[in-house]
Amino acid sequence: MKEILDVLSPAYKYIPFSAETLYPWLTQIAIALGIFLGVYLFRKFLVQKILALLLKITHKTRIDLDTFLIMAFENPLRLFFVALGIYFALVYLPLNVETNVLISRLFRSAVVIFISLGLWNLVGLYSDSAEGTGNLASFKIDKILVPFLSRVLKFIIVVLALSVILQEWDYDINGLIAGLGLGGLAFALAAQQTLANLFGGIVIITDKPFSIGDWILTPNVEGIVEDINFRSTKIRTFTQAVVTVPNATLANDPVTNWSRMDKRRLTFTLGVSYSTPREKLEKCINDIREMLQNHPDIHQDTIFVNFDSYGDSSLNIFLYFFTKTTVWKEFLQVKEDVNLKIMSILEDEGISVAFPSTSVYFENDLTTMVQNNADTGGS
Image 1 (cartoon, rainbow, N blue to C red):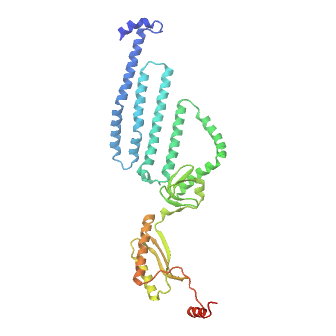
Image 2: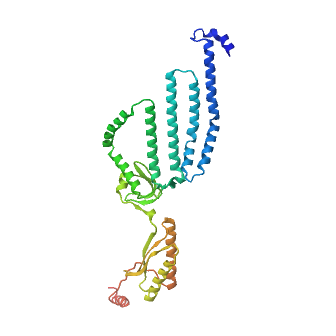
Image 3: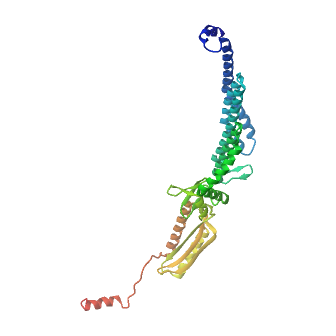
């Protein structure tokens, strides 16, 4: 290499350094490049060994948070070794003090970014996993809290990372915070509705009238809760449309949570014809009550089957009971089964279901009126 540079040295007569000074530089650059390539090529092996060791330790614990932690920092750890290789390579070069300080600041800023990225991934992994509503340490997190807390934690991570990086580059964040405080007042006045929605979301989360996946009914919408964020709650209706309701509106509306029923009511009036004898009516009522009491899908706490009233065209039997299931499909199946069993009881007793009808009574016999009308020639 030195001989080649000596041959080519006349070409560098207009360059302020000679081949003798260029050769050590190229040697140092080659060594620095070798350092970077060495770290870069072995980073995968190092990361696998580190992760394998950590996973071996975490398998002995009973919580999943440590496993999520390792998974979240896998990619940032790979990037860290790349940055570490670049840092070692640049530090090896005989650079001036100002450049070394700049390199150190860049490396420390990169480390802060990698740590923040790992924490960001950790929050995302935990909120997206099936265990997101399970036990974290010693307490249980409701499903509705997971997406909201996820956004809050990610925001905090970004703010803290930005603050640390600004301090690393000698920026005075106290003035920035003071400016944000003054600007926050103007922002609050200009965004009252947005803040109302934000506090409405906090009220929903703390009061927990519903969770994600619940079937709710409000004066404006009915459906399944899919998501809640800082501004609104998304509800998917039974026509598969997604309705976005502002949190401020939802927090002030009455909310019926059908998913939190432990049983579902079923009530109706059964009308039988007035020609039904009293004995058959009593037996029919007793048979229906006994059928409900022995039905495996009917809640046994409350069962009412009673002769209720004399209707305009029927004898009314009042039925009031509850199904054990609250699932709509299963509820309809139980309701159908009960109706068929009631129909079977009515058929066994020879009782007919009444239908709306009107009876017309004539003061005189209808046959006599027709005959008189014929005798008079229809006049």
